Length: 422
Picture 1 (tube, rainbow, N blue to C red):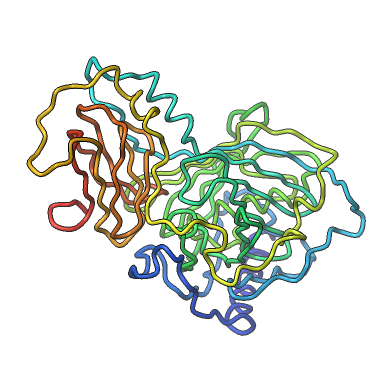
Picture 2 (picture 1 turned 90 degrees about the vertical axis):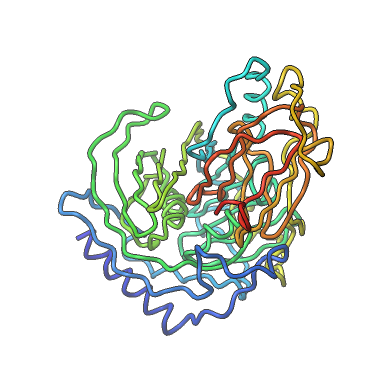
């Protein structure tokens, strides 16, 4: 029955996209407007394929049974004001969660006596991809906390059960909706391109061990983009709010939001996403707290005081590069400088980074995210003591990884272009 309902929902959602919600051309973020379209996305959403489940899959509910089909959001259309359910007033019961995204295949420092493990660990903690998530009244609010993201700190991703897609709320309290299939481009490239959603095979993998004291069941979801293993937990009185967090993670692997992975009172506790080509990306809850006093205004989609952003960039700073760590934090990567030969024509200090590809790329040094650079951008990372460092270029989600290189600082690291890697 769960599979049959999911197939009906997927078909109806496809019809809604084809007949009732024609997609218009979507503008890209201002700092990458001159770049070519993202290789990972197309400007038009593809029709949703039917979701399939294995006979051994655990049935799950993709949306509240018997309710109306959620309406897909469009990035060029403001949302009407949101109102909480009739039985909820100023305060509601829900859950406050702490979580992290984890990037895979990070290469640590070279073996050398001057390497300062404590300084590198401190920098890694500062750039950890932390999330603060509130769930309640059939809504989700996810806040990007701290450094390490390509979006500004305190950017919010919100969702509601009666809509497919999400909204991004910029720190200046402007917002922009985006439909299913756009989350990868937003988190990874600061763009609103919509990637095609493909069929998802869902297979139960049985019971798993506890995560932060909560028993989980394991579900494997496979799409063209990735093979993902989810650990699903149960929280009393959660309702369908946890399904919104499931939809968020499913969007990262280009799976339809109707994919039957989570049911009522369920949410993903952990996820390991392994991309079809290479690399991996993870999600993990680190704390769960039930709250009886969540202010309903903090969960509404859109927020009551938010204004529709006429341009997609909204409150995000128009930047082509971002250095995530200051000179003092970078200086702590080594206990002392090392005398190294400086190439002819090279500046006497810093690491010059050059992105000659058509995608935004992350620069990690000794396994720590240090900077990001938009297509065609260059900048200088200042503060690293003279010496040798493992430098790696990657996409934010890790679905494209360049081999790590041992780079001399002062020096240059380039991705793309002539002799610049892929």
